[in-house]
Length: 160
Image (tube, rainbow, N blue to C red; front, side, top):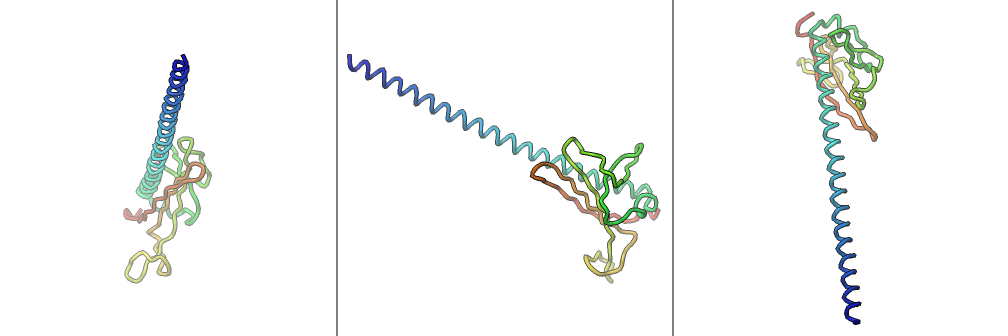
């Protein structure tokens, strides 16, 4: 009879160990799944931010094509602008229109460009080129803050 009680105790111990192993495995799977979802969300956010930044660059190019004098040359260079639409046209404004997709903020800064004696863009010194501007589009989101920045140059290629 003693061996029966001992066997029942061993059986109970085996069940406790099995439940512990299954619980640990389940907990690990849940943790890996949560981490994977977080990484996927981060990549999704980065891809959306990149798309918003590219849209900002293309909008400024579209504005340039619509008229350098009307849309670009009158801006305050070095100031922070936000992209809006006016009818079916893009416009830059100093007033923040709010979040994009309830998560992202996009800013656009146009800066003057100087050229050296060889007509190359100079990072310092040189002569001001009023027909070329540096465009920096920054999209930021999240806490802690993350951001993507795209930089390009536009010129008055249509001479308008």
